[in-house]
Image (cartoon, rainbow, N blue to C red):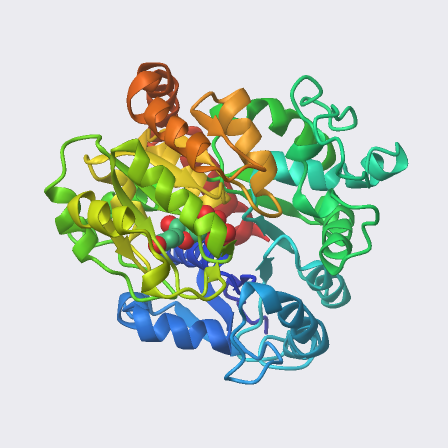
Length: 478
Ligand code: UDP
């Protein structure tokens, strides 16, 4: 007698806000198509999700969904802050990787368990998952939550090293880079991922990226959060290395569009996957501001800045004379200061036309009619969310994929200004005035065109909608 095996996808995000958010959205889309889904979160991430969202009640509508947790190897009271993220990587290596293997080979997801996994969908940086998948003969599809342009630089990293373009010393960051096909005319040293800087590239992060470059092409497929029109020039090259790519972006938009097609879900709100408490009063404050007048500032969930950089940005905002909404995530500004060190003009002007919050519902903020520009660290999710809403960006990238994303924003898509490697109040003031006033029309023209293409991509029969359906079909037929 043969036993029917249910299609069961295991989604395994890296423990960071952006990827967790994306994986949960994908999980919901797969559940809607009848696939059984487990999301494997670290205990730390799961605790914060449960604390700040209604994720459990939201997912209770899917009988084919469940969460499973895994240890990240760190004590409960470890902050998992950016400065100590190396310890997170070490904990993952020492504890999470072996536990994951055990779960898959002989534990709760093995072939003779009650719910064997039929496809593994881990974060693109989890190279260990490919070895496990091959050991137990289960197909694996990577979910790359970084941009295609960043992924392309990662895949080219061995060639960059072989050609002697990386590592480089940071004295002259304007030297052109030639070993990343499709970007030869505009990519400079300063636009490569931050870990390429410095005389040696033996960091833990570089090792992860080199492993990623080795493993991603060997997977059954790769899911990317982009849409064809946005990244056509890079996708051509990526497909030569990874032939089976599913472009399902902008994922948050595709998600909304698919939910709206479900008769029982059409009235439901989308719901948050935030790991911090969202301050929703910023939305009422935005309601009172004139259309397209506010500059929104956020450096995402991981990046940090020094106290001096924070004050430069704050001065730039105030000197621009524009309204601003700034996210100051707990722990994101390094260095102590007390209120007596804050210039009076900053306090007075912020009362008149500024709003500070620790964490906001960013998708809703960017969709608000009062937002005129986004000063961003150029994380990929933030970039996609801004593109969807046609909001021009001022890019102040700090780490990993952000340096290359910001170059694409300014040079390829022409929807913003890249101020990387500076943090000067005069530069910031000028960039704000350009984006909100002086060069607004030129940015808005390209931003609206991309926002329209993004909307077309997620509509029924759009390229991302089709790729999602192809992904679902492939997962079911595996
Ligand atoms: N985000 C949010 N509220 C905030 C700041 C950020 O919801 O106050 C979300 C944002 O919408 C995005 C994610 O956090 O989805 C950040 O991801 P991104 O890839 O932009 O940057 P990362 O945090 O990974 O550096």
